[in-house]
Amino acid sequence: MTNLDARPDSTRCRSAAEPVPVSRLLEPREVPLGGLRAMRVRRTLPQRGLPMVGAWCFLDEFGPERVDMRVLPHPHTGLQTVTWPFAGEIRHRDSVGSDVVVRPGQLDLMTAGRGVAHSEVSLGDSPFLHAVQLWTALPAAVAGTEPRFEQCVDLPVVSGDGVDVTVFVGELGGTASPARVHSPLLGAEVRVGPGGRARLPLRRGFEHAVLVVEGAVEVAGRALGPGPLLYLGSGRDHLDLGAVGAHDEQQPARLVLLGGEPFEDDLVMWWNFVGRSHGDIARARADWERDDGAERFGTVPGHHGERVPAPELPNIRLTPRNRPGPAS
Ligand code: MN
Image (cartoon, rainbow, N blue to C red; front, side, top):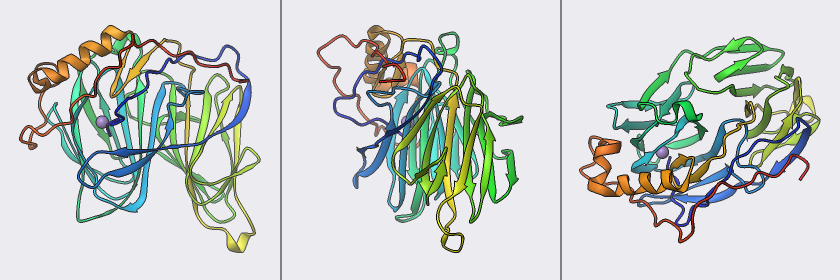
């Protein structure tokens, strides 16, 4: 996924001072992605009032719809991309030599580090697609690491009482994903069947958020449907989930649960880059525009030089954006 905003915001990311459980609904923005037939995504992170949840700094949902996805080679720095499809198949190619098909139930994790380029193209003619793509910010010590790509096809699932949980990143109640991330994080898909009910264990030191992607679910006492991100703050040791409505009318529902330790670094996010300063971002942009970005970002095979050009930098110095406290 690429951020194709003509004027992407810069974002400051700073943690909340005190863990206070809150419950705040954040509406998505509709953002067009590139390609001949533009596809629209719903972006719930970053937001002006909430740049991050733990190290999770970007959250796009696309579909469910029949749509061609065609995202040409574009660069990333300082982050990991996490692609988690619910329906449809996407071909991922990158400049570290990966050429794989991304499928439901499998995690695709690309670590940009000092710089990587990739492309994403749906398979088939106008396939039915539904997925989320997330970014995690890398901590300073590994922000400039060598790029790599990994696919995790065997992820742990915990089941009980009409609820199944797939842990794709991090750990939930002792069940851990093999995916290699660099800060304390949680990413899980939760499927709630008719009559399903569960109390999931949470870490008090994490902040959490929930995105419903199908059906309706009762989350911490409130009914939630697809669209907005429910931010739950930190300081919770459990989360109650349940099917909504009369039992004989309940439909299967699905949600994504995100969590992480509040991320302490001040970050500058612009376009597809995460850095620590205006200079980091300006250098990454210049490196992408110079000689097709090959020296720093490498080349994605099979695109014959087609690529997403970087937008113009704004005429201001990019600064980290302040994160409001949890009460605001
Ligand atoms: Mn991307």
